[in-house]
Length: 468
Image (cartoon, rainbow, N blue to C red; front, side, top):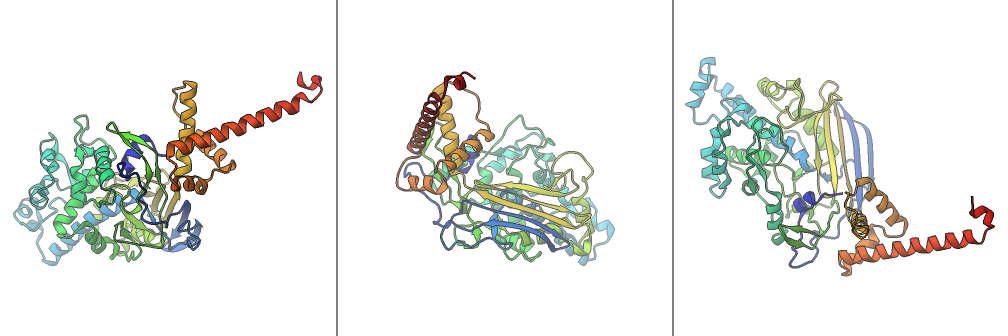
């Protein structure tokens, strides 16, 4: 169930128009992948659900694609590392001697982008970034941050940069008026704000670091992020079913998770709520715009995190060593944007408006674990609002737990108010607030009738039974 903050982040509906903007009726209520690979071979597969609610919706299999949210961050990390890897290969091909590759001499070579590898300071790229993206005024604000000179590429990937965060409410307000707008990395960075309480070196998860990394990828390759990632990563691991979401892509084999955003206020303005646009959902690109399937996910992570140079995405041992430099430290995201789990796997989790994903790899056993699922949010939204309505009626101010919402949703479904019925009510023009009131009234009446029937039934029994 989305929190109010997540609802703001996911806002896609132009409140002035009040109409739906799902890309098409090709949406699904639920679907799931749970896949295990070992050494590239499929070990087990759980796939349930259909690609859409339409009668011709395909049953999903291991080739079905899902939007995987923040798993994209690992791909961005891989792209940035791959550029450094290619640079190392070119330097070695040029047969530079050891003394020519010292920091001082490298600084004098204008073509060197990574004098300190992935620990190269962000400041090394800043002037070129400002020249390439003059519209991104936030870059100048970054330069004013006291610890700016200390921030490295590794800090961007590991969420330890302390340079601020994306202002999700401002992005949401923009998309209320531009629901089909596709952000570039630089535009997403522009929707950022600095928090003076953020500390350099302290982990604070967010999207800004990856979008800045995306800008650096575009700067060095001189290509749009989508094309650069295809060349640097997707094609290199032969991930032919992987791409970044775009309005232009109409994919019948992707699960378009259904997300309904409940009415809320954004900076004092009422947002009417509605269906989310799959191809622009998440307000992200380098930090969350990826679509992939289990086989491609395995191809990627088994090469990205492989410690065996002969099986790696990278051609230089220095890159692998740098990637795993902090693997023994406690904490989060020490492997250049990759999380270390207690079960000896490395990977990342992702979230989208209607689903979640997880991709993990165990380099010791060459095992990959991929999970992705979507579940519609409309019935959850109705269940939550009914509970909230009852809280207000009773004058209770305590929070509604996820468990309560799930229980109320199950009650709705048992009473006949499943996803399809509620969506039909919404599609014929009944407002969300009225849907909640109607269903709540029906449920209350049904419960009252049931109570009366029980009392009537009990009163017809001998009084001795009633007194027990």
